Amino acid sequence: MEALAFRHVEFTYPNTDKKALDDVSFAVRTSEFIVICGKSGCGKSTLLRHMKKNMMPYGDRQGEILYEGHDLAELDNRVSAAEIGFVQQNPENQIVTDKVWHELSFGLESLGVSNQEIRRRVAEMASFFGIQSWFRRDVYELSGGQKQLLNLASIMAMQPKVLVLDEPTSQLDPIAATEFLETLAKINRELGTTIILSEHRLEEVFPMADRVMVMEEGKVTAFDTIDVVGRFLSGQGERHPLFLGLPAPMKIYAEVKPEGPCPVTVREGRLWLNGLLPCGAREREPAPLPPRPPRNPKAPPLLELTDVWFRYEKAGADILRDLNMRVEKGEWFCLVGGNGVGKSTAMKVAAGLLKPYRGRIKLLGREMKKPGDREQADCRLGLLPQNPQALFTEITAEEELFDGLAGAKGSEKEKLERVNDMISLLRLEGERKLHPYDMSGGEQQRLALGKILLLEPQLLLLDEPTKGLDPFFKTILADILKKLQQQGVTICMVSHDIEFCAEYADTCAMFFDGGVVSQDAPRAFFGSNSFYTTASNRMSRHLFHGAITYRDVVDLCGRNLMPSN
Image 1 (cartoon, rainbow, N blue to C red):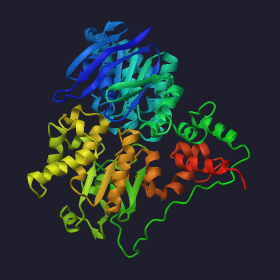
Image 2: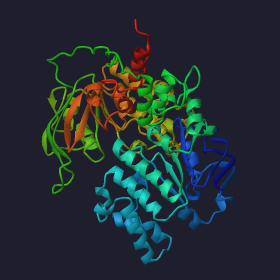
Image 3: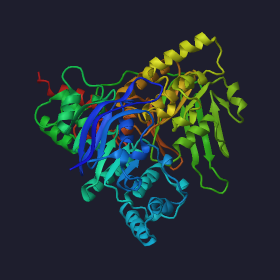
Image 4: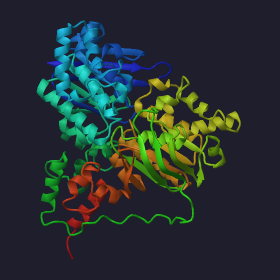
């Protein structure tokens, strides 16, 4: 039986001629687990919003959408609310009450379910999702992972037949994301709930999927099993732009020896490597990285936090505890760690948006005691917040960028040239007239970044800059940041994207319990971790030392498969 079916659906947002959905036709069978992937702005979010009646975007729509054989647009509102659940990217956008227990019951109350039934379902969901220990807490006290889990539990309490999720792990740390996705697999497996999920973390979701859909420019270009879609993305010769988003075992397999069954999971990848190199690797270390330019030991760090303590309320718990952090001029510094440990707070303190009650903050060796000190330090600072919408005030993407130049010198012609250059750099040519809120999560992230870059900062503070970005644009972002770094810009970044940090950072640091507990170069930092490390490292650590990227593993496989002299 078909749970959902699209028949020649087309959709265009207001003020644009570009089709967000272009002749989309497919069907999802009952109890399937479907993963949708594609470049940012390809139409994933728009497609998912068309699967729930009250979330359909405004615009010009053609074609037919069916739910269990009936026109979705004519579906009863109560049936739509109860039987089709929707989990958004940002958990904050979905939570409507102040208490965990009330959030779990809110949807059932809205449906008019009896109190006895509500208590029973809430108890069941709280037990299933492991919410008992924080059942009576205030929602604002929860971490990002807990909030997203609460959203999922609240929806599952209504016993939906179809569950639609739009990049639900984009704000979660690697461990929380894995746990969330494993919960989805359990729901699909044990309850038979149809799951339709858009996700950039293909490493975790590919093994769960019955079928994978690939979207490009509003079209469905592939919709098949994992192995078929894997071959499609691997291609022959030039790789598909989404190739870099494939699970590490699939990428390594495609680059090294694409013969026989393709491994998908880390476990399958380890077994495949054992078969490929049965006698063990002769060369175990990846090629050395190019040496970094020497630093002047007498030069002060660009950013230095010393013995910093911070709490949001006078009687509240400390969020930052004796934080010590040093970022050198021209360095690319990455902070990793779990949700709720204080990473974003540290960025706001460094930016001067929050004032610690103890400790010192220095820019270029000058202590920052009050806001005016930052101007005296002659260090332009740009902060990209975790929520890009916090920067949006205008009605089109183009106007947002002009707003970023409001206080800049230069003629209108010069400002227009700078805006056009930024639109081109961020690949937003087709979205310049769109309202920022009509853009995909990845496009919003790029727009917010553009607004910050127009300030020409010397210090970039980036809070989850790869959130919502597809693998293809991540490489573009990396190129942009590397070029800025070569121009002397210092980058301090908070991220849950372990693969990105491992590939591009100069220094990685673990944030825990309100402070930095360790830091090192990526190979040394990730090489010995068990969970906060890359899939390539987990797959190959029994054979190789310090191989943290898929390119490291491919290189070592190639060298060890060469005939001995």
